Amino acid sequence: MSTNINNLDPVFGLDWTKMNGKIIAIAQDAATRQVLMVGVMTKRAFAKTLATGLVTFWSRSRKCLWTKGETSGNYLKVREIRVDCDCDSLLIMADSVGPTCHTGAESCFEEVDGQPKIYEVEEVR
Image 1 (cartoon, rainbow, N blue to C red):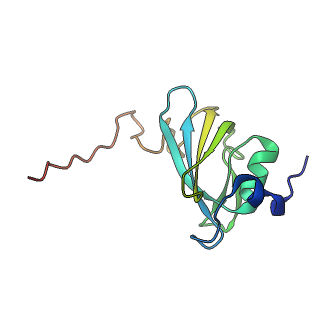
Image 2 (tube, rainbow, N blue to C red):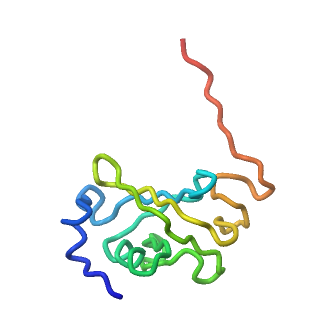
């Protein structure tokens, strides 16, 4: 099944203009609510995500579409996609198949040994 890219805007109301044709996409574990990773999507990446049910991003370094897990097998299977109030970012509720981070961690927001990276800010008075 192919998704017509030109039909996405009226259906989802996404604003692709703020970041030159890209939007922020946050992947969150559907069961635990843990943030897994953050990436960017183009219209084509969004269309492929809808068509396949697998989270696909725009790789800023390689300048091409990249389906999470295409080389590792650690896919993110979409359960639900939420659009923020400004229609310029997405929250993708997903089931992860294996670790999400390229380091082997469950999330890109923790160390390989499972310890979170935390920066604490003292309260300003």
